[in-house]
Image 1 (tube, rainbow, N blue to C red):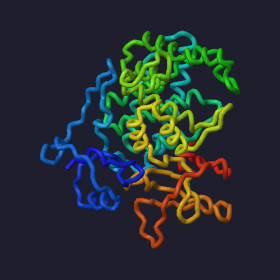
Image 2 (tube, rainbow, N blue to C red; image 1 turned 120 degrees about the vertical axis):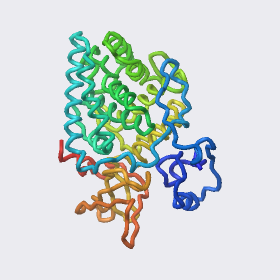
Image 3 (tube, rainbow, N blue to C red; image 1 turned 180 degrees about the horizontal axis):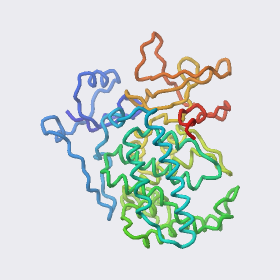
Length: 398
């Protein structure tokens, strides 16, 4: 049978996705252990109808019309990894560095009124896609390590990386991954026309300043429409990433299915990344807290798509500080193979003794000791004066 909906919250079951084909007896045991008494199946996707076809042609004109719950997802996190994290980190570091430099050059060219050359961007995005397909945890972890004075550039790179990883988890085609990746890099290109004193103001913007800042979306649209060979997907990402599912966004106040799938994805990614980064006027929050915020914002976002984004980055994304059943604190360093609640962690702090400990890595998906360690919740790092990024393997490459 093909499970269409487990009829419960993603935190109540151990599977990485809500939709998957039952192929092993162990899956049935896991469902029983989760005390799920009933769930929905899709009779057209059972084992008797052959391999599930992945829908590759997504309309963007009315953008809207997808039923997000029907988008195919990767069956497990494990299948999305073809390389060990350590093997992918060096390449991912080079990819991030090239992408950040590319955005810097693009912003400067746009400021000078020069046309954007997509042929200069395409190789960068292709490298992001290939790295994400190798092991998305490498690039996702690198986006957690940021410099305060490069927010605009690094936000663009992080948005691109997150969009590609998000799109891959939704089984979008390779061409779509490239296009949304380009969209992520260019969605704030209009900020090149915003006065620097507003763009880098170390405090809250006034109403008049915010009205000027909001115009960056229209500037982005104008720049991109003059760009040769730019795709509709790229334009959708740039023009719709500030629209909101309930109609409260800008610049057009689009609502619900009038916002493209790509625009809805970009809105989620844009807010998530902005929430987790320290800025001059606003300290960032933990990745787990940012995910809770996306859920708490309710109708502003397509919550079904938010749930799928959580499946993509994990309940405890890379760089999260978590409390363990042993009283120790650990940093999430990689997604696990078993499910959202079983990442690879690095123990760094003893909350009882209030002191740092010699780091120790544990794969919660593969524990063989007598005492099974579990995550009992997320911890806000600032309260304990802990900087999770310092304990990521990624930091050695930055």
